Length: 169
Length: 135
Image (cartoon, rainbow over all chains, first blue to last red; front, top):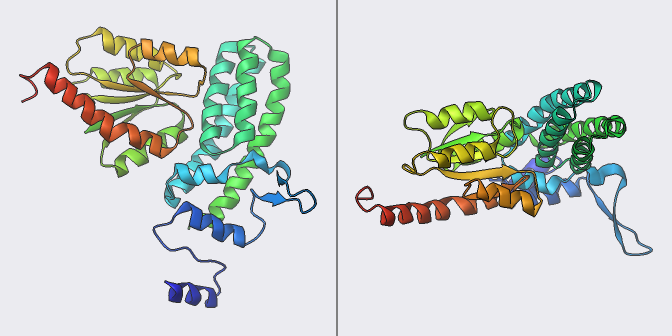
């Protein structure tokens, strides 16, 4: 379908992927377009591959796989994540304030699952940490973890928003 | 075929719903354990249930136990969805009567793999075990 691609690019498109969308095709196209949120950079001096910045926080490939390339579904779950993570963080904060370790454990557990599904790995790891702290009854440290969690979720939401703008019409 | 999805995580629930509908199943979604247990007690209830291990109301394990404690016919296939990855937990899950489990987050293919073959195998087994109803 080279003709289509060329016509799209001539028309001012930045990239082209034919439907049905295959995640790997979409990725290579996105990667070609430049600074993606998740990018592995190879250090020319050492030849080693490192994650750029904070962004190992987020696993795009797994996320695309999980929706099987269904971009509407991707848009849906991104919106659900943004709404629900706010609700769940509020539940976590309330549980910490009221010193309810069991409620905290449950809320953190649910949020861990939600974050995992979106590929928000860093937030998922912090939610797991909170779940463990709750199980151990360590609420003072939970307060600190909550602060990191909030930042990580904000960051994940931002990246997911960008992703949605790129991929979902 | 009807399938019950019971998960309080809306993202998981939406993902499962969409995949299963795409694969041609009829999905009934419950948002907590109490709702799921109600669905399973209704007439013509789903014969396949995907239950979150941990959820408000009645947790997935307890629903398994309750389902297994009642008559075995019709058999309900239960798949536990868990974010627990400790082996001990999984053993506990299977002991409660679940047929299998999926660890979240899972890849669609893991679910897909489980579905057609596993269900076909079990349907066959059921027909062999009760030849009169399997006609």
